[in-house]
Structure formats: structure tokens, C-alpha cells
Image (tube, rainbow, N blue to C red; front, side, top):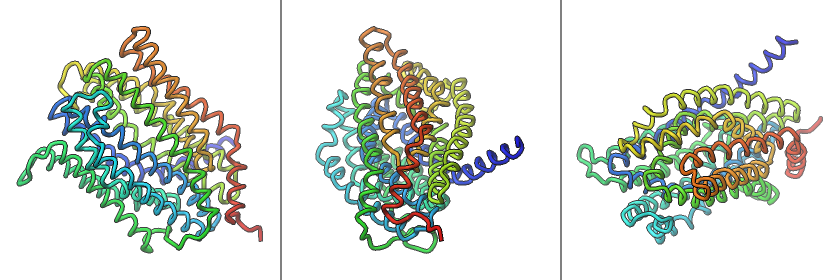
Length: 460
């Protein structure tokens, strides 16, 4: 029995990893692209790092919408692939792509009209606001394309193909990295455009990914496809699953604004250090976390679609164990190697000192963060995005914002309290999500929604 149980566990790990590794490669390159942005801007000044970091706060707003729609479509796509309801799957994909494109238009206007004001209102100095506003206007101009790329990638992944998005986004991110270095620093015949060049490279990558992924869905290359949408039930379910995930992203991003203001209270160098420490952590562990989340969503969703809720539960816990073991080990490496790793981003002594502290705080939280991310992906596959929403928002309010403001400023503990707030946030969120997954209400919710849209497998 032990050998049989071990074999089952290994089989799940192999299946999850087979689906996850292309996402890991894709996300590694995406994170490397963002890391390159920080490294290149760090060659200009700490103010330039802060400008990009503050602009990225706003850039997370459309990102959250794209990821939210992506969560909805990967849930329906994986469930309907598992049940064989490919017509419903393709309609959900078509609707999600169209909604994503339209929802990006308001951000184009915001970036053009209010970019500099948006950075300045956070308390940034005038030059930081000017640079951040330029960067924000450029990347927001391609928000519809960014949404389409995110939704299209999740659509294809939900159908069981994680390699095509890796190929497309791998090329896109590589072009983005080269563009950032060449246009930012002015290599060869190109002028040194500094932060504007970094923004142009990002915008180009967004458009390239969107066009290539839409073409892949339209072609016979992937199992996913487009079709004329006509089922309002699918629209409602897509939005019902996506809405809490979008709300989660928007609310947590909104919480990060006062959190960054707290960081700025302690100085520009502290804010820059947070951006550096967080970037080091994301570069090292982010690709694995996102890969495992996607792989877990696919296997859990397809198992639910195939009518095996017990298998879906087992796969979720097994994937979580794999993630905790591997990402927790990387967290240990980050804790020990924090000093030399953050030194890649800046040579400012004060920024370096604080950045090491932020990197170690994230390293301590790494195992519970992995558990939170993977179980959130499993819940999403089960059409439950409300539990992760409550977990993350409450964790940020109590942890990052509450501990930082009360202990850091009110009680005078300073920046070390901000380090602690990161750990408190993830521990709180992980406990809430784990309890929600264990209770299992998501199983009944999935079955009800599949019945409503006619995706339940026939017993004939």
C-alpha cells in the first residue's frame, strides 16, 4: 500500500511538473524582463528605480483585470476540456478575449491624461513623478493587448497546452529584454532613451504576445479555438469566477498604495530597497510559484470536469506539497545569499542594507507563500475565487498595512516592522485558503455551474 500511495503521489507530481515547467520558463523570462528593467533603471539613479516601481503599482491594475479574466477562463477551459465540452470551452475563450480587449481601453486614456499626476499624488518628488508618468503613459497605451495576451495564454493552458504560450511569451520577453537594454542605454545606433526606452520595449512585447497568441488559437496549432459567442450562461459564469479575482487584484493593489506611502515615509531609499528585495524574491521563486499554480489549476479543473472530485482534492494537496518543498528550499538559498543578490541592482549603501532585509523577509515567508499560491490555483479551478480574495485582502490589511503602520510608525519600530508585516501577511492568507480548500465547498459549486452550462459528461 505504501508503494502504491507513493507511486500515486509521484504520478501527480510528474503530471503537475510536466504542465508547470513551460509556465516556469515563460514566467522566468517575464520576471527576468522586469528584473532587467530594474537593473537598467538602477544605472540611472535610485529615483529612476522608484519611478518604475511606483508606475508598476498602477500597471498592476490592468494586470489584475487580465489575470482575473484569465482565472475565469482557465477554470472553464480546464473543466470543459476534462468533460469533453469543447464547444463551450471555445465560447468561453472567445468571450474572455473580447472582454479583455475592451476593458483595456480606459487605461489607455488614464495613462495619457493622468500619468504624471498619478505618480506625484503618491508623494514622489517632481523628477520621479515626471519619469514615472512617462513610463506609465507608454505601457498603458498597450493595455488592451496586455489583457488579450494574458487571457489567451490562460485559455490555451486550460486546454492542456502549456508549451505554446511558453514559446510565444519566451520570444516576446527576450525581445523585450533586448529592447530595454538597447533603447534604455542607447547601444549601437540607437539613442539613449532611458526610462522611455524601457517603456517602449515593454509596450512592444505586449503587442507581440497578443497577436501571436490570438493567431495560435485561431490556427489548428492548439486544442483551443474561437467561435461565435451566444450563451449568456457562459458569460455570467466567466464573470462570476473572474470578478472576485479581479476584485482581489484591484483591492490588494489599492492597499499597496498606502503601503508604498509608508515606505516613502521612511525615505526614497527604503522604497527603492523594497522594489529591489521584492524583485530578487520574485525572480528566484516567482516562476515556480506561477508554474505550479497553473499546473495545479489544470489538473484539478480537468479532474473535476471528468467527474472525480476526490481525485481533484488529492491532486491539489499533492501539488501543494511539491511546491512547498521546492520553493521553500529556494527561500533558504535566498535568505543566505540576500546580500550578493541585491547588489546586482544597486550600489547605494543605504538601499543595499534595507534591500537585504526585504529579501530575507520574503525568504522566510517563501514556504507558506507557495502553499497559498498553489491552493488558490486549485480553488480557482473549482470555480472558487472568493476564498483567495478574502484571504489575500484580509492578510494585507492585517499584515502589510496594519503591522507596518501600527508597529513601524505608531510604535516606532521602523523598517524591521515592515519586514515582519510581509511574513504576517502570507501566514494569515495561507491559513485561510488552506481551511477553505479543506472544507471543499468548491466541489459542489463546480458541479452546479457545469450542469447550468451543459458541460456535465453524459452517463451513457
